[in-house]
Length: 102
Image (cartoon, rainbow, N blue to C red):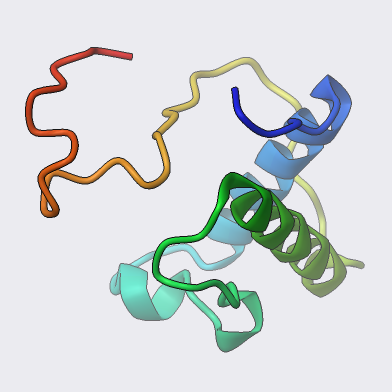
C-alpha cells in the first residue's frame, strides 16, 4: 500500500464511527442528501496524491468523530469491508485492461 495506514485499532474505530454515522441517518431515502454533509466534504484536487488522500481521510474521520461526540456508538461486531482503489478509473483509460479482482 503506497500510504501509511492508521493502526488496526484506529481502522476499527473509524469503521464503527462510519456505521454509527450511517445508522443515525436511518432510514436512508436519499444517499446523496442523507449521508453527506458539507462538514465532511474533503478539500482535495481532482487527482490527489496518496499523501493527500491519506490526509483527507484523516481529516474526515476526525471531523466525523467530533460530529458524533455524545451520540451512542454501535457495538463492535465482526463483518466485511469493501475496499476500493483510489484513482483507479476506466473513464480516463488507464485501467481498462486491468481485470484484477480484489
